[in-house]
Image 1 (cartoon, rainbow, N blue to C red):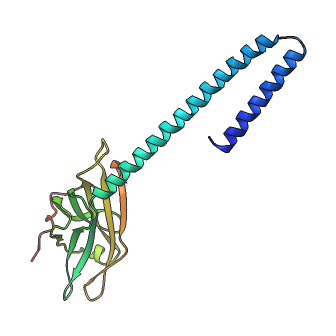
Image 2 (cartoon, rainbow, N blue to C red):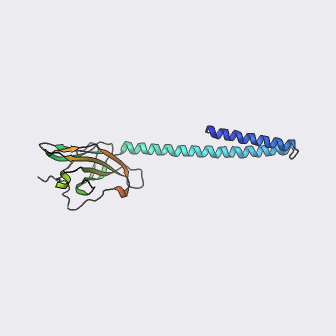
Image 3 (cartoon, rainbow, N blue to C red):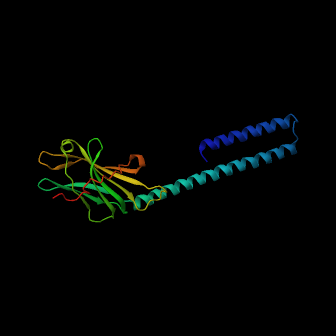
Length: 212
């Protein structure tokens, strides 16, 4: 029990003792009646304490189970990381699975500065340690002259949630004067809600194939 709960319990007991003592001194109740009242009070008090302790144990068990579930999810979840490949100039992007689980429903999407999809590639799955997905794309002038984003959106194959769990990895990029892609800092989004998914794969996309 918490310290405040123990103090509250002692205060209640003290008030009860004083009240019973007053009743006995004023002959309002006899000693046998006072004993019965004390026994009844003790039973009620023990029941309340037992119910409180049972509730605390149940809550602690639930929290522990939740923590264990989260640890299992983290231990078996995929983690996609994308990077740009520059040779003489920009060549393509590569997407790795640096996690421990298989990613499914993988989409690699080029977003412009306003978050509009401009190109993309879809793969059914990417296992941990697999050869990275190669994503080839060109850059329209309005994209090339501003910050754009390469986003990996995917699910984990081992999800303990009754609803599909989506993840995203965002990589901000800019195109240099020499034609190379300068990458920024990766951002990882966990448990992306359905309304925040990009999830739009246009039929006119070239599916990230090498345009050469």
